[in-house]
Image 1 (cartoon, rainbow, N blue to C red):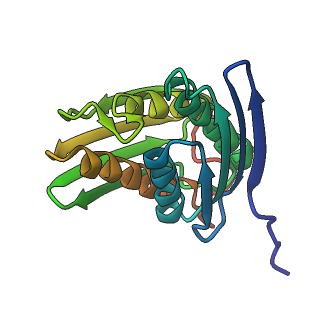
Image 2: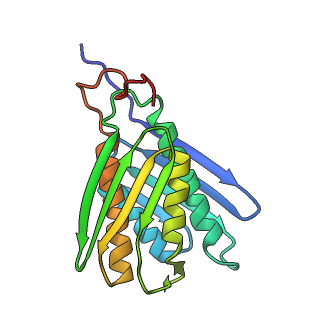
Amino acid sequence: MNEQRQPRSATVTRQTRETDVRIALVLDGTGRAKASTGIGFFDHMLELFARHALFDLEVECRGDLHVDDHHSVEDVGIVLGQAVAQALGDKRGIARYGEATVPMDEALCRAVVDLSGRAYFIYRVRVRRQTIGNFSVEMGEHFWRSFAHEARCNLHIDLLRGRNAHHALEACFKAAARALRQAVELDPRVQGVLSTKGVL
């Protein structure tokens, strides 16, 4: 008889004086997403991230947007990373590595991830525009750094080319999504975890 696995999921909350964040995540989803952060472009990025990762994702964030977007974007990155780590559990049977290169018109981004249990982050993305709506472009890097630290993964994001900031960041979110989709996939040939150490 085949063992029926429960969908890998997590719900994580974080409350501070600056933000109130709740994220519900299902790794084995279909790409359904709803994001409400008060930052329109960021909601768009989170929703397309879920769609291309095939994660089911709900994000609610009430933050101090009267200050700026920093705390909200950072804390969503923290909570999303924690949710991924919790949903993965002991990481038994996962592919562990993922890589994707995604075009968005003139932009081209490559993302590579290793769900190694060790946080390391490289971000090589340069664009000229400073804001998209009420989203600070520099917060793209901060979001992914916060995510990688809490998910305890090795994440490299490289913008290979691109002029339009919207296209560049969208390609980055889609590439990271597709890389993570590969890395979290269950491989029936993997016994235990994919490491000679026996633990990830």
